[in-house]
Image (cartoon, rainbow, N blue to C red; front, side, top):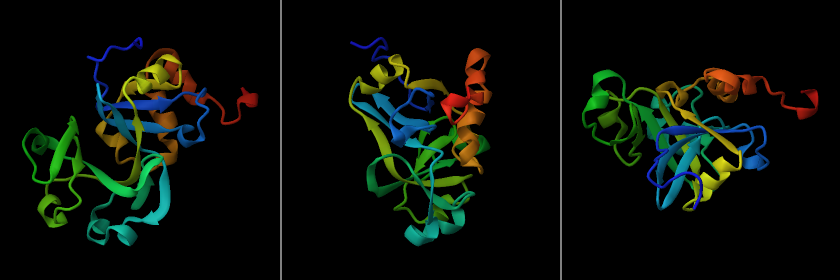
Length: 192
């Protein structure tokens, strides 16, 4: 059994790759966990934009995509599938929104099969992801214990940040104590 118990759900939290992360798929990534339970974990990488515009793949949603209006690579698994996240601002996030399922707080999954017009009045920023990151039961907990990930709180703005290349440093910078210092870690470790 790993050091983390099964009763502690990390759904809605961020995984921030530590400088010790050796897998190039996750170097300097920030992942929002969409599901974490006894059956495993699933999340999307928030800071890997692709050059593919949303309109080229999901034309009906093109006008509703946040900046930058491109597809993001959500992870190395299932790259032929798409999922979307959106923030429901203010009081609307308290009730049910047709075509939107809450993940955590104001952040939720959007049903891309629903007509965009049904949701648009309710949604804030929309972000579309190709693929996802997944872990078998206990695998993520082991990686956290091994020092591959920092686990931190998410904020609704993390989903729709307009400068995704700065998200890794920004998330670390807002942490307390020594963790904030990791944001200054050089891309080339020999420069530290």
